[in-house]
Length: 589
Figure (cartoon, rainbow, N blue to C red):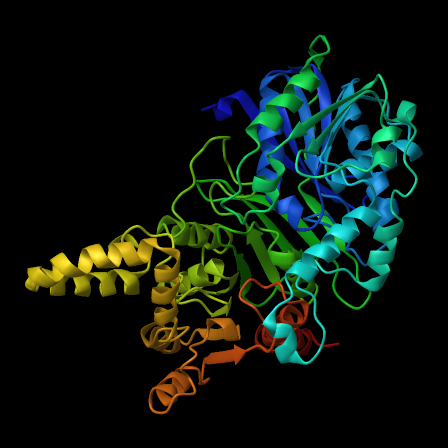
């Protein structure tokens, strides 16, 4: 495995002050570099799927002596703006700003690598700006914004769900859904293809071996300066759920070889003084929002603090991710909500657990088990790093197994509040665990221990039960039946609920009907299950119409977000308003 002593990674803001872009600069350890490389990521869900691949490429290039800048396009990831803004022009400017930033370090030769829409964006920018790229790699490029939009809509059509019929209103099943105006902007993006001579001295185009490339696209890029290659690694990387994506090692090696092939001498370059703070929102009706790039705890976990430029009041809001997400959140939810709530006077933090997202990680480093108990420790460490004097004065907000982590930490720290969207409390605690007694969930370990004690008392049952249970759990059908049976009990065990209520932790559970017991309408048993779904003081449960467990239903997701936002504003932002009114009364005119 490569060592982190061989490269440096620095988080920073760059570009125009009114439209700051988030970037990660990866550099060699020494004071010399052979060249610079701009890494242009995809947009939407694909940006999360490809983060590790681009990060791996940046690390390998640093070892080879190259300085690279990975960044988020305007309106995506951690960069300012949204897809409802004029993102098309800002995307092109972002490429030019990235190239300019690399050259400002004293690097004369700059190349670019773009993946999916990231390649399309660089190509379009080359038609408008004199980028002067030495080399350009188009990694599985989208032929235009229209072609990307077509793929996105086709994916949504494949995911149509029974929730659509139950709602009685049309809905899309997409993590990133675009408004009509944004769709039209994207539809018109990069309709005219760039002139080859304006892009780069040499170009490598890598396409999928399982998808056809249009004749028009291939004819346009057919030139002596253009190399073509195919790969079979895109599907396993883009179409699997994290953390099950397969790293495209062969493709990374191919790109690395292409970029480093031209002979070049190392020359001195300057390490920038990283800009760690930026004003990312200046809404006229709210407080301007500043975001700070931070490292949390001894593990130096990556985090972004969003807060009002004036003094923040109220509890700290902590966005908790599971292993299938990064600090940006599903559908960019953590970015948008933290900026909204910071604009109301609250302080928010979104961060990556160890070895995920932008937290310290090395290519080839193994992931921890999904339900490893140290993940909850990561959350606690992050809270203490920001709220060292009063870690309990915080509110945890999580989705899926991130919601599960949030509930676990809230039980330990007795937090002011917790909001959990589709927590994996029934079936989830058993998934991806070889043995129940090694789960990080105390309730699961307790359940496993009771079973083990019973089997020890009756060895003859153990001999029959254990082989059968192993075979059932290892089969797809059997596992589904067992986990389905576990779901019959409750989306939130009574023991967890009673502890949260006792601690006066303001709890909000937002649940999909997919996660509820189908027996809740059965006499006697149904009445017990329905009572467990009833709200009470300090504990509110909302079954959101149209919400699916994967958070893909646009209508269901919007309803869940609206409930969550209202809950935070009424429960915690009012603290800010009350505090401000008290200060006004004390200070007086």
